[in-house]
Length: 252
Image (cartoon, one colour):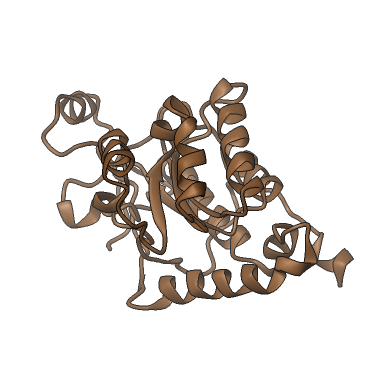
């Protein structure tokens, strides 16, 4: 069984998608703590929610908060990591150290990543999956990047003809809204689907199991809650996939 679960296959951008992904937002963006919320927590010592959601950038700026979260009884944390950065970026090492510090304190770590940033290229999907498995994260949410509607950044992208969807209903993290700089919209979408399906596979879950067998039951229960949460009210999305011969997109 172990040998079978250990088999992996890399991302092939030419492989057609056989089925649409099922996706829903795990943690609402508004519930993620930044520097202001962490400062309020340190000041007021308010009870922690069952799943704390914190922006990785806030913890990277002030790593001492990790010790205070552990002292307050944090046992599960959603880390909005955003991105590993480009290959060779020091951000990856910083995120690795942050996750290891949380796990050393007994915290089960979930994480969220955004795909489709301009530094992302075809190899970013395999690199992200390998990092998640090496860090033994309990669960992962992958989103497709969207700019702020009406922002100057949006206007620059529109002038460059890089906006794929203008309907705001498609700006949900499950549609390709912006053609990335280093790959096509089609490759981005296929890579996003591939990474989601890979991380949800039994083989990936097996590789991410904790090293200590004594905590496997808690890991499996947390994993079950994670996947049940994704299935409740989940919707199938099959969109933003440009046709091979042109710049159009499949209907949502």
